[in-house]
Length: 278
Image (cartoon, rainbow, N blue to C red; front, side):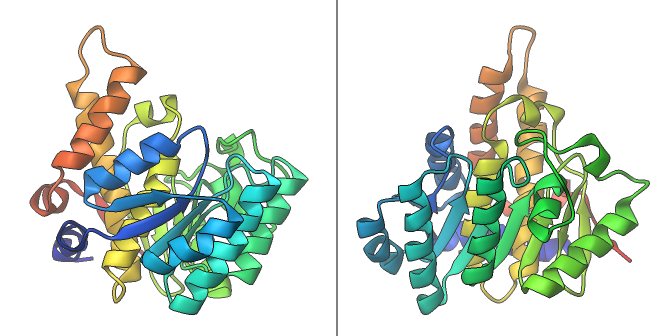
């Protein structure tokens, strides 16, 4: 992928301020809103079924995160998702903890089956569970056997391309090495920081950022998602680099938002570690 495509994807977000409707994890909702603001988007948080139809009508995209499920929020996801489909809006699905419980797995599968999902963003364990290929996950963390490594990179990319072909969605599998794929092409992204796994919500924030990039780049969905994943990872690297001797994960969380806020297209182009996979 040409670096220019990544720069353009971020520049388009900054230029258009995409309005994203988020039905997301209660634990991380504030961080998700701030991450969207940091990259140049605008968040609306609403999961009330009687509210979401109107809210989605005025937005450009929808981020769905099943991290803290309840009956009302699930209903709101379907109502908002159906309206998004009618309007041709981008829908990003984050199947948090799929495989950890029957409710999570069933809900994620139903959302994927019944809604016009544009992007699936999760760790390998969650995405495999969504695809029906894993028996369990360890909370919301990737199972060690599912982790993407240099040794299984080709097989992981093939899985991502296959699932993308089956669903019609771009598949973004995040971990130590990220894979972003559609039915034809797959990319490895090697940006990121291990400290991102020591805060709550890095993945939830990324899902909402992915939605903003999808809304701002409708003609280049795959490229936009590579840019979003690489940008978030690069921000994590910058945040870790700022940490001093008394800083911990609380400081890192703040530095991560700061790095997203300061990220521009030139920095993304220079720092993205992206490789197209055979």
